Amino acid sequence: PGREPRPGRAAVLRTRTRGFGVNVGMFAREANAERAKARLVEAGLPVLDDPIESARGPLTRVRVGPFERREEAEQAAAKVRALGLEARVYAP
Image (cartoon, rainbow, N blue to C red; front, side):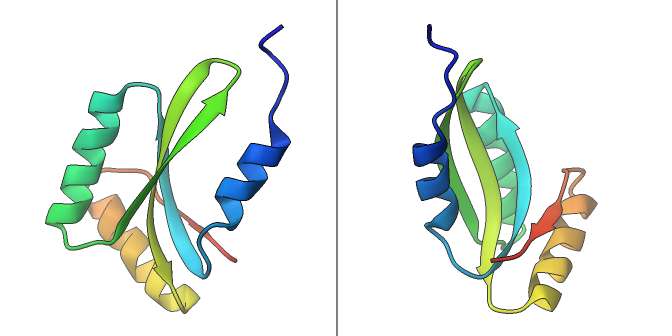
């Protein structure tokens, strides 16, 4: 009970944005997500965040984007890494 995955919801959240982007992280604590988002905004990056339900409870997914070209996402990922955050480019 309570441990069933919710593929329908995850799939909807993943298809909401189009283009390339950068996954920054999944945060269990809202305060940590807010700190990461603030650093990204201060760096001039476009921030996206989504609530995610997981087996461990609610999470906040923080991403940067979307970008039309992979090259733009790669440049953004370099900025994210320079802030000391994780960055993984994803494709549409």
